[in-house]
Amino acid sequence: MRPLLAVSNTIDFLNEKLGTICNWLVLAACVVSAANAMIRYAFSYSSNSWLELQWYMFAVFVMFGASYTFKKNEHVRVEILYLMLSERGQLWLDLIGTLFFLIPSCLLLSYLSWPFFMQAYSVGEISSNAGGLIRWPIKAVVPVGFVFLALQGLSEVIKRIAALKGYVMIDAKYERPVQ
Image (tube, rainbow, N blue to C red; front, side):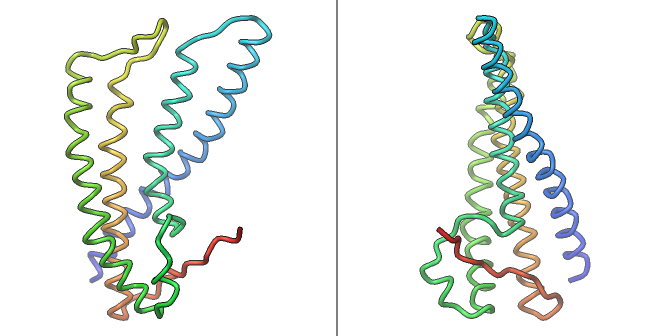
């Protein structure tokens, strides 16, 4: 179990770093958005590349932030049954859901989106907007983001199995959001 927990820790570390980058990208997107608006209204100047840069940053922090959010146990879940289960039951439900639904879905979506990226890369796709950015790098974010989410799913499966076998204690408690 020790080698698998080492793999899990490596995946967690990687997604923690991606989460930090995504947190900074949120700030950067806000700064770019504010600067773009100020320049547009103050100087009557607009640039499609700045608008597209905002979209690109948004795509990156959504797709890469998903694995970080999953690692932090802050993801959306159906809590109808979950909150009625014991802690062990919750671990089993997390394990089954991740193993049979999340990981296969992420791998399928990554596989299906890869040709979308490859086609854009092969033709050197750029934006059709004047002054727009190249498109193929941002199209790589979709399959890569799903791979990171599947990897984090693998990490969570390893941790749940280790917790069920008594090797580790994990804090997998879920608290219903206060509304």
